[in-house]
Every structure is written in C-alpha cells, then in structure tokens.
Amino acid sequence: MPSKSLPVLPGATLGILGGGQLGRMFTIAARTMGYKVMVLDPDFSSPAGLMADVHLQADYTDADALRQLGERCDAVTTEFENVPAASLIALAGWCRVSPGADAVAIVQDRSHEKSWLADNSFATAPFALVNNEADLDTALAKTGTPALLKVSRFGYDGKGQARVATLDEARAAFREFDSQPCVLEGFVTLEREVSVVLARSDDGACALFPVAENRHESGILDVSIAPARVSDSLAQQARNMARDIANKLGYVGVMAVEFFIAGDQLMVNEIAPRPHNSGHYTLDACVTDQFEQQVRVLAGLPLGDTRLLSPVAMVNILGDRWHNGGPHWDTLLAHPNIKLHLYGKEAARPGRKMGHFNVLDADLDAALQLAEQMRHAL
Image (cartoon, rainbow, N blue to C red):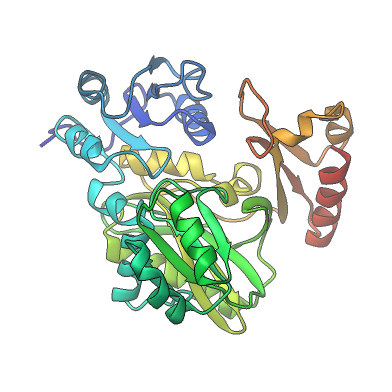
C-alpha cells in the first residue's frame, strides 16, 4: 500500500486519468493551488494534456505509463467513469487513488448501477437487464412501452441508446448495439430533471453543492439552473439521497447524482463518479468550485465551502455553433455578468462540447432570460 501521508500539499504532483475538458479544469484548479499535474491520455492534443506539466500519451491500460504515473504522483484521480478498474487497482499499489476501483466499477456499468440502486432501496424508473435478445420480451413486459434501450457500458450524451416501442424495434436496436449487455428503462412523466454534485472525504465528511435544474437537447445537457426551481423539501430530499448514495458506496471524491422528478417522487437516473457538466455553474457562482473540491478531496485537505454566491444559468456550447459564421463571441462578451469557459479542443463537431458560459444575476429569472438570449444569439 502507498505510504505517502495526508494531506498532500502544494508542490506535490497530482495525476489524472483522462485528458478531456473535465481533466483540463481539474488541471487548472490544481496548478492554481500550486500543484504539479501529470495527465495520462492517449490523445496528443488532449485539452488537459495541453495544460499539464507532463502529458503521458498512452492508453489507460499501458503498464509502463501507469507505473510512471503511480511512481511520480502523490495521488491520482479520474475525469471519466470508463477508466478500467484494473488500472485504478494497479495505481493504488503506488500512490493514493480517489475514487477507488470498487465504487467506480459499480457506477461505470448501467446494469451494475441499476441493480445496486435497487438492492439499496433507491427509487429509479422501471428497468430490466438485457443480456441477450431473448430477454427483450420479458423486459418490455416489465418496463412497458415506449422504453429506452441503453448499452450498459460506454454510452454518454445520448449515444448508445434508442427509443423503442415494439419488440421488433427493441430487437433491431439490440442488434445495432452489437448485442452487448443493455438496460431497458421505462418512461416516466417528468416534471424536471435535477442533479446534486457533492464531495466526500476519507473520514466520511460530505459537502453538497446546491441542487441544479437541468434541461437536455438530444440527450446532451443544454442548460443548468442553480438554485433549482423546486421546493425546499424536494431539494433537501435530493441532497439527502445523494449523500446516502455516496455513503453506501464508501465513495471518496467528487461525484454527481442525476434525478428525475415525477410528481412528488424523486428517482435516481444516473451516478457519475467525477465532476459533472451540470456542476460547471460552480466555477463562477460558488465559494469553492467542483474542480477545486476534487483537488481538495484527492489531496486529503478539508472540503471547501459550497455556498452559492449568486443565482446562475449555465449554457453548454456545442460544436454546432462553429457553423454559419459563429460563434459570435463579441455578442456574448458584451455582457459583464457572463463568464465564458472554452475547452481548448481543436476540432468543432456537431454535438461535441466545446465550452460553456455562466450567466450570473441576483434575479434568477433575469439570468435565465439572458442565458436563453445568448444561447440563440451565439
């Protein structure tokens, strides 16, 4: 086991598996706090790698790269859930790793995650596991139609899922997904979708950010609003449930829990073992943002204050905006209460997250109105 003591203080080297935008924002937070950062990512132009002190360009299973990362870093974290659990186990032999492999292994697979939630009495939408085509008939009877068929592994932002209304459609979708294990999820009548980002430390202390209200387009997060426009009791229920999930997982790190609200019922949609797109509002609107919090947990430091300093609306900027002469940065930056964050990605593609902006205003409705105007004007 690693013998390095906590806390890990500025001047030390922190590592991260994954070099996308979440890794980039972690790297910026860590370097701002005085840490060196080493990124392991196979992409030579990864956004985080461009900001780090060292970029190891290698696969996440590369034994030599993992050894370099583990031996040269005091602690290592992840930016996405699909890091192989075996890589986290290997790294834990050299240095501190957060989150741990056991928790990541549960939530990186939809089948395991849904089963774990059900086994621990957390409410979800109706679901059924589909391991082969013969399971589909029984699964549809359980969930009803229409339903969503989702691959158990490596699906994100609407990818790897299909809406199905009949057995024939479900069979076609399953074959399109190469007959890999899936989860079939029944539809519920939604009023809102919300999420809770939290951090949990080694001693079980938990700091929760304000509940965010989320709107999606084509399976991709479009707008997040904080504080969420829900009752205080429902917001507290979401925070309590997110804390309970983190405690039962024995989770150490930053994580997000997404919820469906149907009537007065709160149902868990997904768990993300990392900072989350819906928590990007914290970069400008909270005392401590989710990436500084990730550094703090990883380094064994006290958790930061998560108070909301201003109501805020966050808008994702997708690669679609680079067409037809956009984006119109001058229009966006003409507003002094808008904070722009771009991710340093070289190629803009439709549906690809290229950045986001936060609109801050003491009046939440005014923040949301300006966010909507800029969303269309950009």
